[in-house]
Image 1 (cartoon, rainbow, N blue to C red):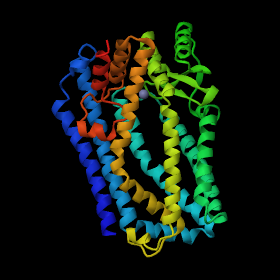
Image 2: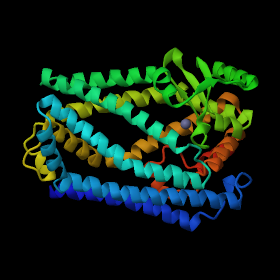
Image 3: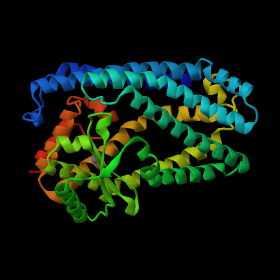
Image 4: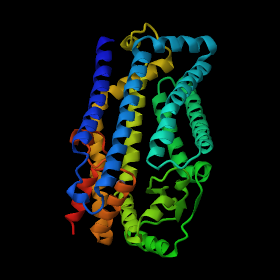
Length: 410
Ligand SMILES: [Zn+2]
């Protein structure tokens, strides 16, 4: 237990230190407009960007500190043992206990994260003019999204628990197959069943732009079913664009906020970047990798869950099957933490490739550079991440690096 606690503490402290380092770096350099962004961002806008980034950073640091303390206490100060005993006292049977165990944790995590999300949306985001949702809409979203994830998680848990019981020696294979099928099914059904619960999507009504997008996707050789506009502005003025769907069901979704902020060539440049992700199979490779990791995780859980030494890692004498899976999940997240910068570097590599693809597809690297500068400025991005923080967490290269590379392609 001492070693497990030390590793858990080391990862938690290291994460907090990185966030603090990033904040301090911003405090020291956040008033200098990077040369790549002169002309796109002035001193006043930079001050807003840095203040917003610092406010988000401080909130993130507080949240990280509290969650490390709460999770640490739950795992190492007897919380899990008491929770496990409580579950056994209110529910009977293997299935009943398993489901109450999962449901209780889902409720705890939903309830404990709500105050942070409320503060973030109605104080922080509102202070910088991003928040556009009413409390009514916020709570409607919150209830719908949590009801949906409860339903999916409980059904998955029930099915997995019955597989564990029915096939005690091969369940890891069946559970992996189940999770893979469900995630594929959700990807296919989400545009019809889930997205309409939250957003109104309508066909893009700007004829010129629609034609521009058609010719761009044809030139890239990607078949796109529909080009849609989503009413993201009902919630937030943050802007974005994305591709979803598989096979012939692929769709382009543009935030209405993006449409109002950018010129047509800039929107096409952003879409050309997104097309790059499809053409270079980034989405597919990532999905396959995640599923492969899940199969490995399920196999490890199958091998290690019965181990007599497992409860001892968190100072317990005994633990139920769901509690054992939870201990394994926590151990995995601590042990795999050193992979974080590798996964982030992989993602940044894909982003650079998609940027290059966009320029090969339609030329005009400055269109994309200006679009990125505008996105960064409108969304109040951090122009001064600490290099170590960026190396660890950034899924996209820092804005100045991307814009510098694009300018170099002219
Ligand atoms: Zn991208």
